[in-house]
Amino acid sequence: MPNKILRLAGWVVINIALVGLVFLAGYYTHALANLYPALRLPLPGLTEDTPQYPLLDEIRALLESRYIGELPDETALHYGAARGLVSVVGDPYTVFVEPQAHELDTQNLSGEYGGVGMGLAQNANGEIVLSPFRDSPAERSGIREGDILLAVDNTSLTTTISIDSVTALVRGPIDSQVTLTVRHTDGQALTVTITRQRIEIPSATWKIIDGQPTVGLITISRFSGRTIEELKQATQELQAQGATRLILDLRNNGGGILEAGVEVAAHFLDGGVVMYESQRDAPEKVYSAPANPGFLSTAPLVVLVNHSTASAAEIVAGALLDRKRAPLIGQATYGKGSVQLVYSLSDNSSLHVTAFLWYTPTRRQLDKNGLPPTLAVDPATDGRDAELNRAIEYLLSVP
Image (cartoon, one colour):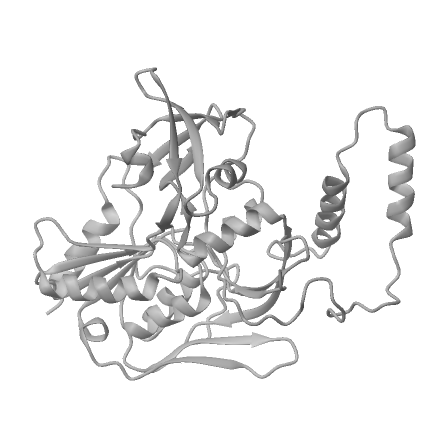
């Protein structure tokens, strides 16, 4: 499989422990080019005469001859060495990611995969809790909200298994089959065999706010290959339903595809700078919006943010704030202003290397700083959506 270089800058993913540091901060991804075929030279900094690591060979020999327990297999040892090598760089976003997690990243950001259509979460007991998508193969087979997944293809799941591992077991080629055993909330067990289908992962949802027929809400949970088309569909439907004012909800959005984030911001702006990007030994790059007079760039707008709004979402929020297009309502954002190149390696693992820094139109450096809200609103503890309510109040006060 050819090496791919991906550009990343932020995506928060809950319950993915294997690459938790990278996902906690988030990342953006974009396939740039097939520059390096797998294991072919020259890769940056690698030559035919590159020495091996004799110290690692010594350590391994001593472990094999003296360690009283059972050593991990060879692949696990190699991956452990790779993680250690990368970790001494000291950058939380420059990381080694194993093949399984890398493949799931790619699927999620592409916006589709082969599967049965259900969300997975891990409860406090380590059990895998299921949420079937509406009208999905999983739902049609009888899987219900809150079911516990017990086995996949007759392999029982342990409470120590990761979400990544379970997701990889459930997903597979379109038209292949997978057998799932679940336990309903009433205690009854169900075993079903489901044919995997092409599952689209929505990145955006939209609706007219209840009781506010002129206020449309667009929620973007990640920036994927589907986001721009979904934004266009949202615009058409909300306008047709009578929306004249908009709320853009970026809470808990940790990023996704860099270009999708920039393009979303551009849709809400009528030309001008979206962001600046700097890198090593290269001129500064300016991302600009084209002239775009229309509903999205002129309708009264507010943006909802919180501490988990990161990377691509911060690009959008920062552009709209600095360009005085919209106020930010909620809490300060996460503060990730770096971009990673992702090199796909020969075994489909990947290396994420921080290579770019980005800045808002007024050149705010957001890395480790984040964006302050225009109107600070703490989350409510009584079930109300305090940020959304404040946004509605603000919009209705705008002429």
